[in-house]
Amino acid sequence: MSALLKIALRAIMRNKLRSSLTILGIVIGVGAVIVMVSIGQGAKAFVEKQLESLGTNVLIIIPVSITHAASRGTTGTITLTAEDAVAMGKECSAVNYVSPGVRTTTQVVYGNMNWTTGVSGAGQDYQIIRNWPLEAGRFITQQDVNIMAKVCVLGQTVVTNLFGTLDPVDKWVRVHNVPFRVIGVLSAKGQSPTGQDQDDMVLMPYTTVQRKIMGVTYIGYVLASTTTAETRFEAIDQITSLLRQRHRLKPGEENDFTVISQVEFASTVLETSRTMAILLGSIALVSLFVGGIGIMNIMLVSTTERTREIGIRMAVGAKGKDILFQFLIESTVLSSLGGVIGIMFGIFMSKLVSYYGGWPSLLSPLSIAVAFLFSNMVGIFFGYYPARKASGLNPIEALRYE
Image (cartoon, rainbow, N blue to C red; front, side, top):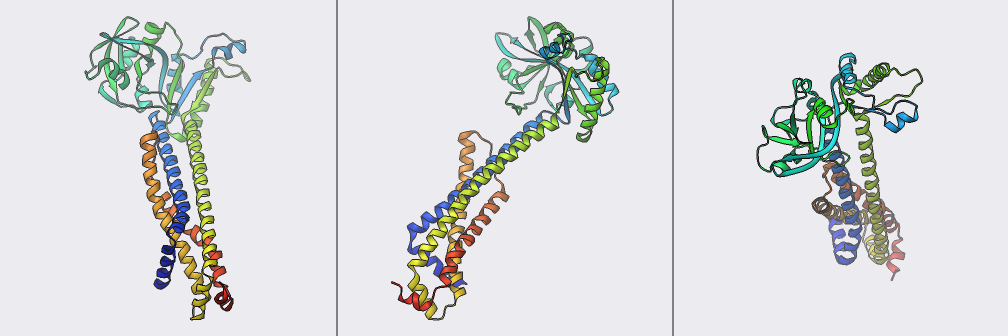
């Protein structure tokens, strides 16, 4: 076997340019597989991290739009109230935590600095539902909600733009010319799956936002956390039944609210990510297939060029299987070299794309191993026919070939 390997290497080295061009197809194919899979894996990990940042087992209950409600002949007001949220927490056994919410966009001022951001009203369970730790200070309490306290918790983006390197805790900011004391700072969350900056926000007691900033009595949404991921369907049924009863909706009448499960949203996003990874990987495998055709083409040419050499080997005692193995080893060596160089090329390109393109990439040892194994299989598969053709030559005719 070692003798056959030496012969194969000598044959490859005799035609360096042709061998290099043959290897190039495998290099591009393997490199493309690694790059595409690493980008797909990186995107999947990035999406999973973002979805995790939204909270655990989260349900979002939102009222229907005013236009939708009006088209049904009902009043054009939002019907979701804080009392609905309280009832969910008390009467729905599959619901663990509940936080009423309202949101508006306004300007927040500190000294001579100002920043336009989202101001969200929340309850004391908001931090637990969103799984959002504090970097400093404390969070909103039920007492703050009850007395409509003029307190707020800031996201990192707001802190950076208003306070710079100063500690904002116990300092005062103004919203609608109303002073609010900063009681806490949230840790950084980054972007949401929809691309929004989650840290660009100010949290206040929802009652404070309702009465002192927006001047409304309704709430814009309710965040609820289920006991487990498996109980989300039970929780949705319980919430739906409770709200239909509280809103006095008749049988057959359309709901004036919508319950959205974070799990379903996460599954949809991850499924899309997986589909894209499979698609990109498939395109890269086509490149490997094309590289394999190149190997077959070159090996067929090599068989024709070396017909007389094959006849001489057979004349001195080489058997058909020896000729078969010789050409299979040559094609496998070509594909293996292409696989090794392709792996290095793919790793380099993955880092390059991630650095300059800003795309997340995650190198997978499994994808590297599979790409290398597949490149070897390509060499064997596409090299078999030329090798078989070479081993089947008639020694006498081969010796006469010019």
